Length: 136
Length: 363
Image 1 (cartoon, one colour):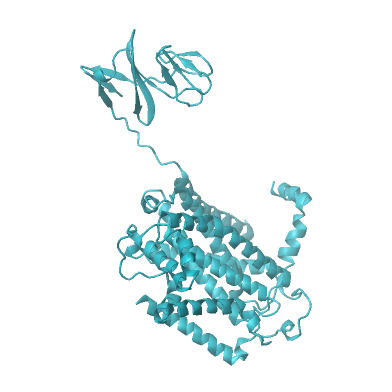
Image 2: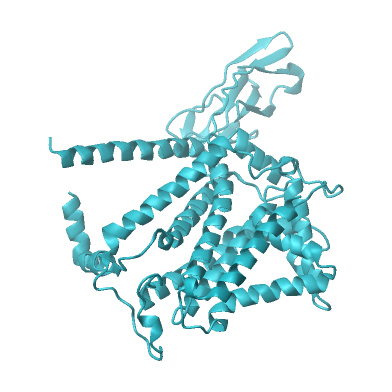
């Protein structure tokens, strides 16, 4: 190896290290702050949601809804539409979940009935312990 | 690959001709010294301020209820936020030191003399804008120090009859420092001053290239002897090429600047932050020993010494005027400061006065 090429390599090496030592802090600085994955359980009393009504909740930073259906009982669904992330609304008269953005329609099980959504709504684990509803 | 890109650009913007005329065939005088690089170092330092400032802007909240907290979060919770804030704070202080040194060396070498008066005026205005940057940025963390220092400074115009009170109220957006002031100073610091400063940089650099760089007076000087009644660009056919020779020198000085900056950040992180700089602003309690930054200490002490408020501030303004218009007041043809004993004496006196006042202002 020629002396000149050796120095070129050395310069490239040292330059890369210097660059990396600035690039790394910058990437860390700009990266979104890590959300603590709060798998905390959420509990509320059964009396809050009589049959036929629904209650909006926020679980793990996700807007969700608990519906007490007349035929199948309690269900907890994420309200984030699987199409492009708008928030679906519960329509009590039609027994449907409607997305205002692009007319996605879901039934109360979270399944897609019509419109563009590719997947059913995400279901949240729900347990009933006596008089308490536990989400998570 | 690299050659292909170069060729592509060559066809479109004539890169070869540009690098030849502006870099390799642009020559600087043979006896150019290390002080001629200080302007470039200041430019690099300013660029670092811009970059670190933009990073801080991402997390800073310009509201009196959140400003202090957001700066604390940048320092303690945002990954490497401390690094960018320290670069900004330390950088601002050593940048001003470099700018002052640049000014002093240009003065001593007589480089402001005809035909370069406008370059000096532009540089002087840049110094004033830089100090305004320091002043407006000072309030943004919303600490006791920044709150009360800004109170003192914005009260200064009240010394003038009739218009003084109005100017003070205009600066503060009210009778005292409040969220309105913070908004104003924030706008000043990040939106109003930068374009003004960039225009001045453009003017300064344009003039340097247009008139030609000034020869150091030590040794030979030819051009300054003849009466200058027409435009003539000064060139140095026997000088050394700007690139790579002089550019390398400039780069070395920038590296030294950055090294000093990181040395200070590492070993003296609290150099410019006394306790008052770490307590949130309290409009109901003025802390003891409220002092401006080091570069304002001398004028500040002068104000304290002169018993008449109006006289004190008027003298300051007259001094700034003399400083800006100095090239027009200095009619001597001789550039070399070693051949001008009176100027040398006055300069030494002023420098000593500045240093004495600065340390006096500190205690």
